[in-house]
Structure formats: structure tokens, C-alpha cells
Amino acid sequence: MSYQSEDTVPTIPAIRKPEDDPIGYLCGRRFPLARNADAEFGSSLSYADSQVFVKQAEDAKAYRIELEALPPEKLLELFRDERVKQIQQQKLQEQAKENSRSFNLSASKADIEHYAKLRYWNIEEGIALIHGKSPEYAKWESIKPCVNISTFAKTFERAKQIADRAVGIKELGQTNLPGFFIAWAKRMNFPVPLELENEVAKYGPIVD
Image (cartoon, rainbow, N blue to C red; front, side, top):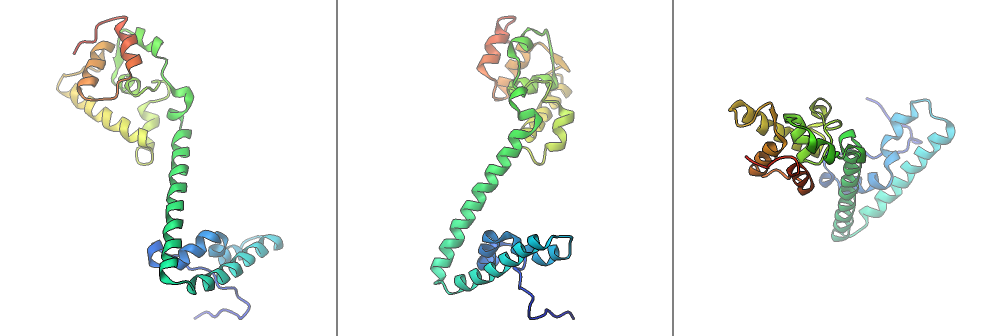
């Protein structure tokens, strides 16, 4: 069994669910470094940096005492407000990550005028274009690794699955006239951009 010396500053234990320990959760949110104090002290931190951890741990201990003295309803209110704030922050962070992926950058927007003139699209090109993406950026080989972490990647995967099954029963070909692919996509309720449809219509009929 190991013992802590009297000089050891207590740290905030990790918790699995915020609801299990609202006080620990609130302390961790306000003083995030306190949670890692013991682990960091064993590393090559400078004296100044280690003091930052110590200070946060001490402040967290004082904040815990303050929270423990609150009426239950006030503590619950603080907990709920902080959870809402955390969820909003996480959503913003996730959206920023999604926007930073290569197939979501502003450069990935499709050159509709160019692709409308091509005499055929393959399946992946068609899927990318009906979602407003350039086939140069929205390629399955680069999208596939992001399926479990990207909203667009999952959307692309599902659209590709539907199109591949359509190829399997010869409803689509591996390559298709742009107007034919757009008509099929509209029948499948895919979000075909009106700009793309109008540009393709200049060079051939939109016929399913």
C-alpha cells in the first residue's frame, strides 16, 4: 500500500460520467490541470510549470469545498449549465475539424461548368457532384478512412452503397450520361444542386 505525505496536494479523480460526480466534474472543468498533476510531476517539467499544476490542484480543492457547501438545487443548476457549455464547445470543435478535412475545404467545391460538359461520369464522380463536391477532392479512397468521424464521409458512403447496388442490378452503369445520373439521383431523393442540373441540361436532357 502506498501513502501520501502530508505535503501532497490531492488531485481530482477521473470519473466515467459527469452525472456520477457533479462536484468532481465542475472542479475538473474549471481546473483541468489539477486532474493530471501527479502524472505530470513525474515528467521533465520545469519548476515554474510544476508550480502551475500545484496551484491548480490547490484551487480545485478550495473550489470543491465551496461547491460542497451549496444547496443541492444550486449545485445541480451549475452542473447543468456547465454541461450545456461543454456540449456546445464540443460541437464547435467537431464542426471545425469537419470543415478542415480536405473534402470540405472551400477548394473542394465542384467546378460545375467543367463537369457538366463531360460526356459521362463514373459513380464516384456523380456522387461527389450531386453533393456539390469536386471529384478531385471527394474521392472514396480519401473519404473512406473518415467514415466513422465525418458527417460528409458517412453521407458519401451511404450514397455510394445505394449507387453500387443500382449498378449491380443494371439500373446504373459504371459510367453514365450526366443527365441520366442526375435524373436517377433525384428519383432517389439525393440533394441535387439546381445549378448542377441546369448546367447539365445545357448539353443534354435530364432523363431517367
